[in-house]
Image (cartoon, rainbow, N blue to C red; front, top):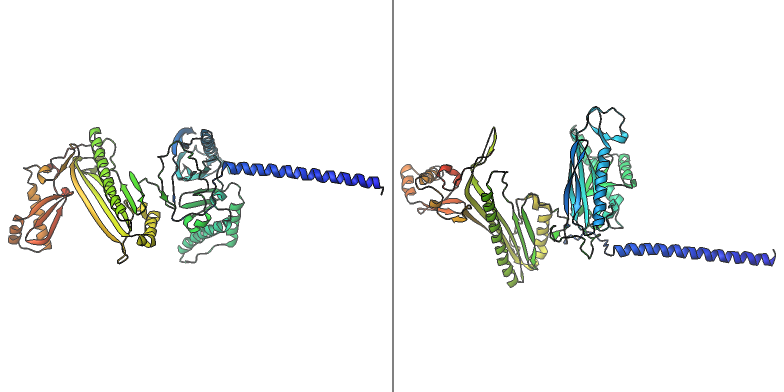
Length: 543
């Protein structure tokens, strides 16, 4: 080959290589710039599992109902409110809005009374469906949200789920819930396998066969179908993850795979993304589903390194128009007073904890207020009859222990009480001290009676009963019956004993003692008396 031709080929090759390398470098730099930009927007991404001793915050976000009309029916659409970045807020709300209507438009009723997706529907529609919509906020914490949107129709329902990263406004993918190296397929497989086994177990149990098994081929199809779906159907709460594929659904507890779940920390930011900072609860133990529907007030946490407090208050349910405006204001005023009294008790123990740094204190307080009433049900509905007398109660539990006993034993007990039991109970965690473990426990109940309308504490029976009402005869008959059947005294002995009985108003009941019987103590409630005897009864009837 001519040496000039060889030289020309070499020159062309050299320029080609330079061009390729230059282009590659430009692509690499461009890609790196994209990565850098993404990282600069989300510098606080933390890929760690769940800290079982950690805490989290609810989002300072409000979810509002947007009322719209669809097919002649009133429907609800969830809309978020409270983000500083209104563009992101509007983006999320529009996507939810559009998705709800798209979802509704793809549902119809078929002639057997069930519902199906309209795209798979080729039967004649025999009636206009009635739509009832609702939603449940499953998760609203750590800058993420998960909403379960439900449509009820013809004794059936369908649902769609909305999961968002509130920092960017982007939809969360199923994989976003996990750390990068999590065995997601293994987690999904086990969850579906457990569900199929459970379903088969109960189905077979009806026929007397208790073998729980599943078809591996069936399981493979479900798992593969779910994992291959780009738009995986899921929702989550602070404790659970729920996944769906076709007609199959299952769920699993985060605590069982805590090392693989990153959603508690992954989208946290240094800067607060909300307009307000006092809407959501703060410092909740991880893996506690802090939904406070059953209490008017729940407040708990660490005030000092060695002091834990808990106040739970269940306010009174008063049906509409059953208590006049002035009285309602007065009873709410009394409720606030009892709650404030509880917080004074917290400060008392807080000071004690400061003075004893080698000990740990746990204080649980359950204040309560109730109105003495004589409400009853008739064929026409409830008849509400309330008195002007309110009964208050503050139940106090206090644990005291060496610091090391708390760290070695009671810290786990405390967290578990909130993680598994708290919202099943009527307020307050239940911790049972173990004998000889170094912890002491005491409890106390403080009960009082008030004329709440006039803001007066009642301390004497004469302040409750009319003087000519013969209320002492009711007490005497009660005590006589008790002495006869429980102590088997004869009539003469009973007559002599009741002459010396003492009656005191103790808390929300009458306490009767008899000096001749040291252990005798009889508690009589106000419900033993006809309401006509009670001074503060002010009857109001409402149906």
